[in-house]
Length: 165
Image (cartoon, rainbow, N blue to C red):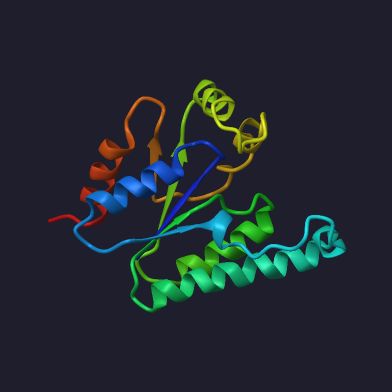
């Protein structure tokens, strides 16, 4: 099974992924897309090449899908691409794996602002900017709101839905 947690920066994806791992009777690998994504030097000219970026993003999603095809349960913690054509292509790759569930991870704008302010590794305003487009046009299988519910509670509810006894 692939569980794709998609949401804005600071929405609670990582906390939810860790809570899912801690509460699941099945072994669930946690793949943080930000750490998995290949990188170049920040000033490399290829970073300005949209075609190159698209090829890297598609290849990364093919690699993620390989886990699912290998019958390895994995939680993918990361936002889908914001460009609609690229996002749809990546979703098609992931949904080609049986048992893929795409989960929207949301929280209030106020919570996003508070969370960003409390973290030194976040660019202020980035989550708010993402919030305008990141959920648009995606057919999510589940949606969770981390504003007022702890990740542990949301994880239990999701696991009961995904793996009914």
